[in-house]
Length: 172
Image 1 (cartoon, helix red, strand yellow):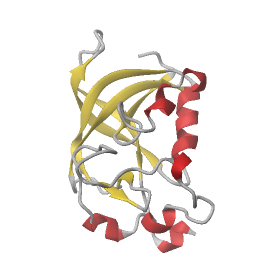
Image 2: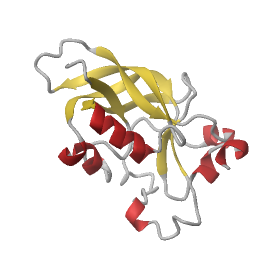
Image 3: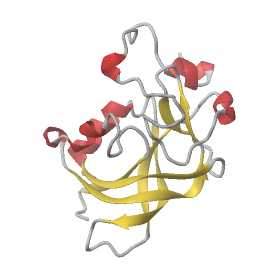
Image 4: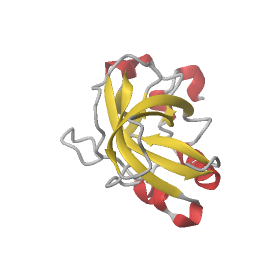
């Protein structure tokens, strides 16, 4: 991996086959390269919340399940684009977490474990810990909580999903 690239773990709508994957692979917004499917080494709570059914990885390591996702190498331009898309640092924080790779698409990759940055929700409303916790996110999954894409959000100026997921003092 070149020194100017960042290792990124995605677990939600940015994964292949999910509604926002196009933002990750758009060549006009920087470079990314798929490395492997992966799962978190530790348990994390992955929940689906807000009326838009957004997937959130909550900042409570050791609770929930080992979360499946994908690892990518991204350049600085792509990382800045994704930071803006994900609302970093106002919405999510980024943490470096340990992941285990389990499907290799990189010949030079010999490691099975690595550290990758992930977008994680902090200062969340504790009620989220009572939500169902998922191992894998699929916007079209059997859970029936279909993700509402940004282009489909007719009330975006009146409603902010942070109101449903952040602690009251953090959401305002």
